Every structure is written in C-alpha cells, then in structure tokens.
Amino acid sequence: MDSSMKIGLMAVFAVSGSVVFVAMQAHKHLLSKFMDKIEFEIGNSTETAAAKVEPKKKVRFADDVAADRRACEKAAESDGNNDENLEALPENWQAMYREILHERNNLKACI
Picture 1 (cartoon, rainbow, N blue to C red):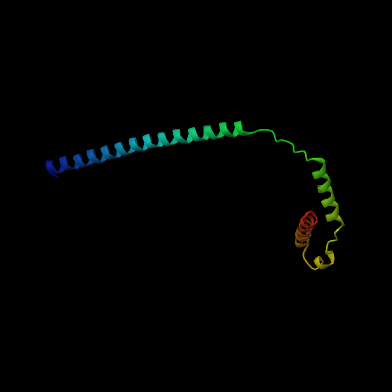
Picture 2: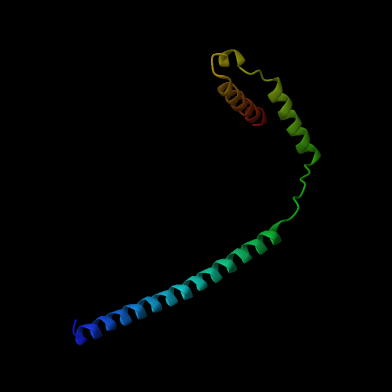
C-alpha cells in the first residue's frame, strides 16, 4: 500500500470513530432526558395516588327508602325461580341463569 492509501484509510477510521462517538453521546443524552421524564411522571403518579386515597363514606338511606328497598327484596324472594327448566344445563350455566333470573325478578319487583 502506498502512503496516500494509508492516509485515506486512517481518515476513514477517524471519521467513522468520531461519528460513532457523537452518536453514543447523543444517545446517552436522550436516554438520560427520557429517564428523568419517566421518573418525574412515576413520582407524580405515586404522590397523586397517595393523596387521592380517602376513606369511603357510608351511605344512609331515609326510612321510607329503606322500607321500599326491603319490600322489593321480599317481593323478589317470594317470586319463584324456574329451576325445573334449568336442570338440563351444566352446573355453571345453571348458576349463571339463576343469578340472571334473580336480578330480573328484583328489577320487576322494584319497578
């Protein structure tokens, strides 16, 4: 190899090494900014979640509303389920349909 070829090869190595070095520094800078942003958001979310936790308030119904509610529950209990139609179904389906019928009866009784 002659000297001009060696100088050209050294120049290529120097330029490519510089490009790699600059790319690594840029990547490191972007990554640190990204991590700072993520840590900031994680810190804010835990602070706001801790600040928002409040004890649940208990609800008390008026006497007439409570009486209506009890009447609806009694009416729903007195309404018979159609268990004889469900016997042919698998047990998990029977449980699901019994609950559906129970809820449907509750709605009919309270309307």
